[in-house]
Structures are given as structure tokens and as C-alpha cells.
Image 1 (cartoon, rainbow, N blue to C red):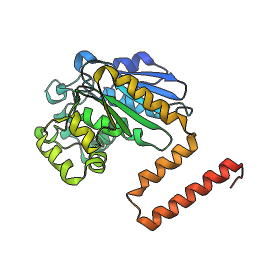
Image 2: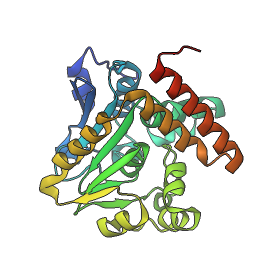
Image 3: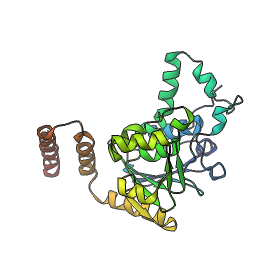
Length: 269
């Protein structure tokens, strides 16, 4: 039987799944807290992350995602590949034997831990050190922005295991580095260090490891300095830009600015 879904009201259950949440006013700090396992990911962790997204207070404007230990996340817990699996969770053979509808629903449930990080009302920042592999790479990609330590090593290893990246990482990766580079990264599963991450846009900032959290918190403070509604409108404009032509984007800018001007002037719709 699958374990119950943890909630923000039950921090012990969240921590048992490898996640800790601290609310600091308009900033929420989400920490992967299983460093002995290099923050390996499991369905329980994904449920915990999904619960965080559902239950964040509306006052939160910025979410900082960080990880304890030497690695951000070594990726999927390899026990999922074994006959024994993870207690209380289906292993890969059980998932493969499910009906099409059941399998699709299971993967969609896993994706819920990743999909909320780009929603319109918050900006999310990942502080990434050491290895960010497979699901770990995709969790970093789920965030809007990434601050990386100089020792960071990204890799998308799913294809090497006969799988595909299915935890929402393919679109942000392609958006950031382009189709050809994304295909090469995924199909080879090679390691991507800090210099390449910075050059290709995977990392917004690269800093010495001992400065990582301070740099990520400084970025969070910068993001909190602007008025919330202006940030939300700007994020929506940028997120939608790829699907609009120039004229459509101009119109979206005009509509967004009209809302901002009227809001600032205290004029309702």
C-alpha cells in the first residue's frame, strides 16, 4: 500500500520523505534532507514535493530549493529497479505491468512534484551543488532560476538506462540550451560542469561552493525587492513569449502594462 501523502502540517512526515520546509515570510526554503543517500529521489519524495506546492501559503513569493550534503540529488533511488523495490512503492516491473491508463496516471502523479515550480505566482530558485543527475537534473530544471556551485555536475542519465526524461525536464532543457544541444546532452548522458552550465544558460550564476546558499538567498532578496504584481505580470509575459509572434507579444505587453498602470493608479477594471 502506498504511504499517505505528507503535508506541511506534518513536518515529520515530510522529513521522512526527504524534504524539509521552512517559511520565512515571503520566502519559502525547501531542503532535500537525505544527504546520506545523496538525496536520491523516490515516489514518496515526489509526493512530498507536490504537497509543498499545493499547500504553500499565498503570501510566499519566492521559493528557494536547496539540498544538504555534497550532492544536490543523485537522481532516482536505484531500488526502484530491483525486484524488491522500495517498500510501499511499485517497482519498475509493476509499473510496466499496469494498464495504459494506470501507468499514465502514475507518471502524471510523479510529475506533480516537478510541475508546480514554474507556476505564475512564485519565482523559484534552485541552489545546486555536486551531482544533479537524472531526476535531480530535472528538479533543478523545474525551477525558474539556478544558482550553481563550481563543483556542479549535471547529467541526464535516463536514456543510458533505456528510459526517457519524464519528470518535466525536456521542455525547460530545450528552452534553455536549444534542441540540438538538449538532444546531445540527453542521448549521451554526459556530464555538464559549471563552466558549460553558465555558458549555455543552465546556470544563472556560478559561485564557489562555500558561497552557494548566500548567493541563492541574495538572488531571492533581489527578486523580492520588486512589487509582486509587476513580477507576476513580467513572468507571464516571458513564459508566453515563445508561443507568440511579435505582434501578439506586443499586444500582450500592452495589456499587461494597462493592468499595471490601472492598479498603480487605484483604478479598477
